Amino acid sequence: MPYDSVQILRKRIAEQLADEDLEPAIRTLEEVLSEDSNKFGDLQLYRSRFKNTAKQVRKGNILPDQAQNAFGQVREALQYLIEEVKAKDLRPGVVNTPDANLVLSYQDIQGNEIELDLEQLERHGARKQAEDFIKTLRKTRKVLALEEDAEERVQYQEKLQHLLEELEEIRRRI
Image (cartoon, rainbow, N blue to C red; front, side, top):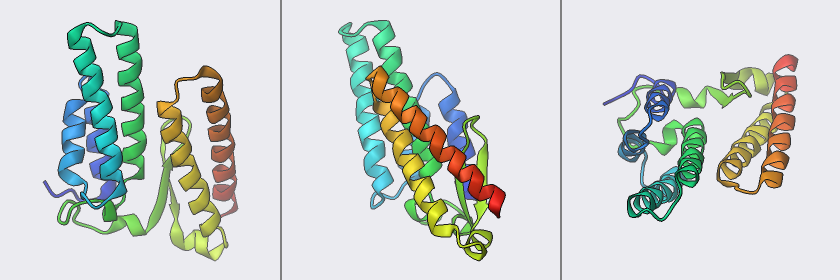
């Protein structure tokens, strides 16, 4: 089970999320996340929403479109959770190398993994700013994933676009 890096673990779980069934990805996250991590609590919330929706489908209490929407929101929330996972969030022995302390990473609008070298950020005095933008980006994506109101979703998407533009500007500076 040990992974060579947090990035490889993220990729493995993202592959599981690409499948129709979310259960394998949820199970893997439960196996690797430390119960002391805030991410574990978030995972339990998403797992509960997934299980509740599946139960409603079995009982026939929810329309297929509503179920697909709810499952899609859980999938999106899990994708952002994966993006946020750091070595410190994992159980001991899950990752062989402490690479999470060398870079800040986030996904751009196309889903590409972008890494910012912490040493370069520090040299250019942009580390704190980049960390704050990435933290806000991740929180906004998490809220967007669970937001059902269309107007609110548009506002969060606009905020995401602005944050991604700011992060791109930081990347150009370093």
